[in-house]
Length: 483
Ligand SMILES: C[N+](C)(C)CCCC[C@H](N)C(=O)O
Ligand SMILES: O=C(O)CCC(=O)C(=O)O
Image (tube, rainbow, N blue to C red; front, side, top):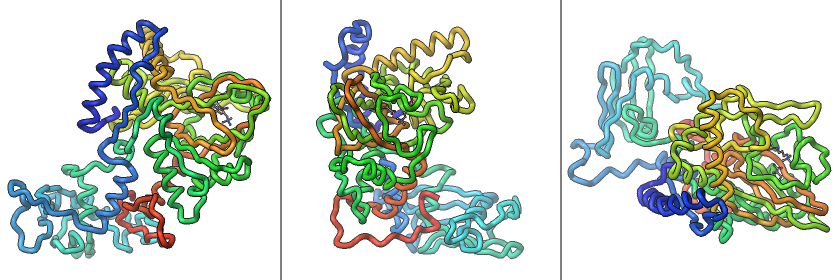
């Protein structure tokens, strides 16, 4: 579930209630669109992934402010540090905030990150977890300014030190803060009104050696699910270089960097002049590509060929508000897909029916997977589920194709667009004349890795700031919040 925070949720609920009336009437009267209910909702979930990581990086280097309110003042202590004690199977820590958390002795020993237990360069565990006696128990714990110092028994004589912030961040009994990036991304959901101010960075910014522009570009993608890049030289070379700025290109049966037109050189309708409805690519792959970059290099002697972008997370949030049962159906029932347009390839995901249109993780929507043209035969459902799925898909399609959801933009040479293929759907209108499009796929892991490294570098900085000098790379700590 997209979990908007308080106010935003009420805004969304009230607007969805008004929307639901008009939506229901619109659904009842298909001729009317819900454009009249055009609204752009901007939902700031509690923490953006980037700013959460940035905040975590900041905290790693500073102690959290002790709480001041009298009623939950931390237990009296003479040195202003968290308190700690050894219980039968766990160490108990009382933080300055007044919060308490417990850590299994086994867990603490397993997570020692001294150079003997955890390689300081490769950040890999050196300790053999299963050499740790299952009943291991510290002989002493000490609260120090650097963190919790744990002295293990002479039989395994070893001393470990755990920074307080790291302990708090990785607390699990109870969890004192969420840290699952898949559920605390900052998603600014958008509808057709995004056309008023679409996220854009300049090619010059993105290519700048200080990487601030690259960070801004990828932070846009993290928040909006897409971003334009303006001022791109209208060449395949410049577009390929722009693509690899994010990470290496993901090669597929369509090749590496693509430069395509309506000549059916590949067995796919993208290589025709037909209209393509809003879809995500690669539903026939077990792991669809993460990003997709497009740059229109030419369109002459013809019309049409406009680009369609739809925020699948925005549409899913409305579906969930208005038709929770349909949302649940699309989040539960897997959909088979294939790419079989060429004699030499026949792609289907594995397992073939394992991937639903809406994939949740930890109660949060993490992926939209929708390409109705590439969907294979629905043969795996009961009769009741078959009707249920089609009813749900019809509601999904209705919201997906509403004027409120669709953002149409006419690309032109010089402006590239990158979309998060796990969230934003794309399509195009039919066209005539000669139209040449180039671009590339980038793996989702490559995109997230690049963003994570840039977040380490610029944590808490304003990417728009113009530094006097390029920031030196920060030494990655073994206590990095992302390890
Ligand atoms: C992007 N490129 C033109 C190379 C190929 C497009 C493939 C489109 C395919 N039907 C899918 O949805 O994945
Ligand atoms: O030609 C376009 O504008 C988009 C084609 C498309 O949807 C794709 O390549 O996935």
